[in-house]
Length: 107
Image (tube, rainbow, N blue to C red):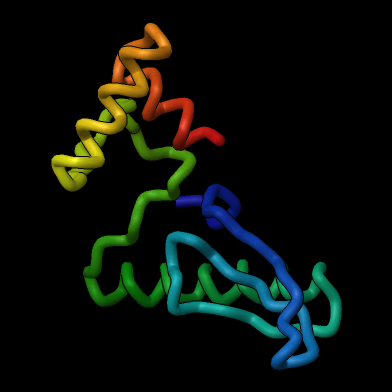
């Protein structure tokens, strides 16, 4: 499994006064550094070490988000009144409820 297939992000931490490297697939990991480049290199190294340790322990390594398959469908439970309001909006706009909700999620 390639470490560079995971989803990384570098952001500024005002609290720490440093850049922080994060990995979406390993939310408990972070790496603080003076520069964004060093934060990214640090979190990638940390992920690599954790993956090696997980493999040694026989634990399952999460699949990178970029390599996961998504059906394009998910189920959301909402209150009946909200469902009614959305259905009414969709009807008034002449679109399906699915199209309306999809456009709202994308906004």
